[in-house]
Image 1: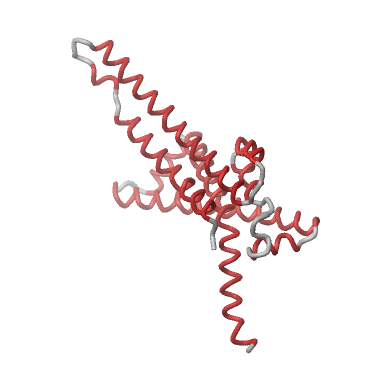
Image 2: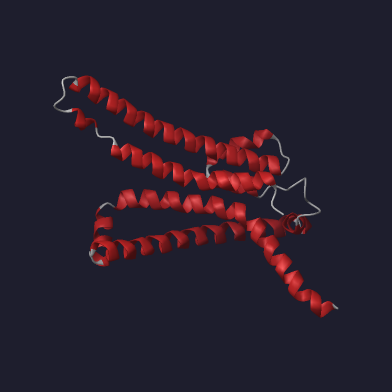
Length: 215
């Protein structure tokens, strides 16, 4: 069973893109130039600009709080010191370290924690490196799949050919590269949190399938 802290941490991580999208939507809806033509143009323009800036800072602040809370809950679920929270500043790399910490509370009841503890130092190092590489590859492939699906969707809804859409994206490649890099890092964090759950589910299913053969 998933710990309550892990479930809440997963929910908080899933809220991060929602907050980003809502914040970006509200940011784009506010146009200070709509104050043009009014008697108090200068004051209204500055007020709208201030609201727009506050929305950007506010959404970034909420995302940062969600991230710190998710990292803190992962640490609590493993009954580790709060000093580990400093690793949250390292982003996905720091979260990878937090997610791979030994779980003091469920070392005997959690199959994944028991499996990791059974490995010697060198085999565990190889295991962690393999998991690191596989998770980053999966995150990258998920981003590529999402990009291709979005291109197909945009082409179907707008009538623009996929080649034209790709050319438009290439014209602003820096912006797209940054956004896709953020998507990859976000997927890495989710996969690191979900991996022990998948491991336990697969192990349980394998045990159920093998049980009739042992009788």
